[in-house]
Length: 368
Picture 1 (cartoon, rainbow, N blue to C red):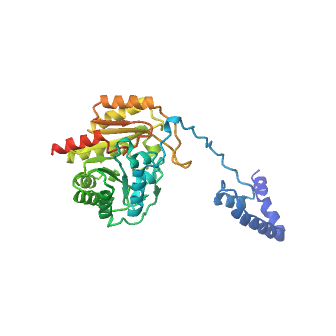
Picture 2: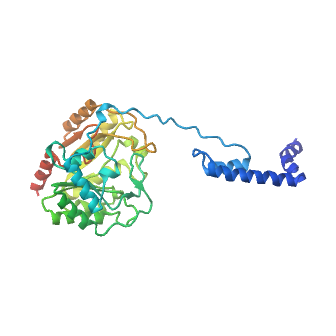
Picture 3: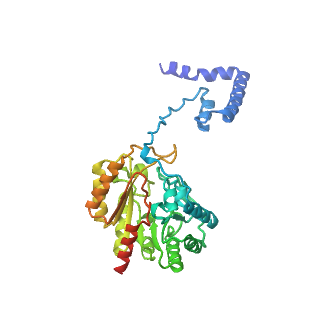
């Protein structure tokens, strides 16, 4: 039986050895076929799969495509066109300064309202410092990524301070990409930008939406003691969905630890976080998250609808109704948060400069 198996398994090789010219001719034909496939093969097949075809002499199996059917967007997600005078003025100065804004990089749907000033005419812009390339890759985020982004601009603190003064804002939001490649993960640069703004415009209210700095308290403290008014860091989603949505270097308890540490080192600062809905969370998940945030002494929470930036990103699980967002606003207010913004188009820095939040910041500053 063993001899019979050996004979059958070696039969194809024996045939090639008996006919060397036929073997060479067959190999040449397959090489030509491989070259042609590498030029013209359908994009759904990788080069590796084409090489496997050459090695095996058989056609590769095409991967079954997942359904790309997206949930239809409801009417309440329609936004006003960005066309106001304030919007055009701010866009021109942003281009002139060469600064990046998360409003554009993250494709925020509220750019027209925030840059235009909304009904009260107060414009809010969120400036993204330390470049436009992140060292992390979260499944919900459209900001480009790299393990080695370009170096930061050492003149950026001065440029930002001059730009926001020219814009005539009274409230500015700073955010940044993650810079795990830098020795202090960019915390020193963040501090320098805040302090430059405060020197140039002492009355300017400054909010910083920061990375987690991998939970390093020294780096967190650098930003928390820089003179800013609002320290924001987003937990993004409930604990159960963290690994699905966020880069593996981020986690729920690490983010809560950042917010808790800020209050420990600067009790008068306003702390803030944001949650995306429509990603598969349950009411029980969200209720527990709000309890955890209050335990960390977080002052402000915002709720917004997750919107898929492109087909490459995590799909939307559900579109949450405006009525449900209103319910969560009432729940959060009832739990003791000092300020809550909740709605389908709310983002972490959405209308950050609106009257109530500015009043809260000034009240906290008077306690110093």
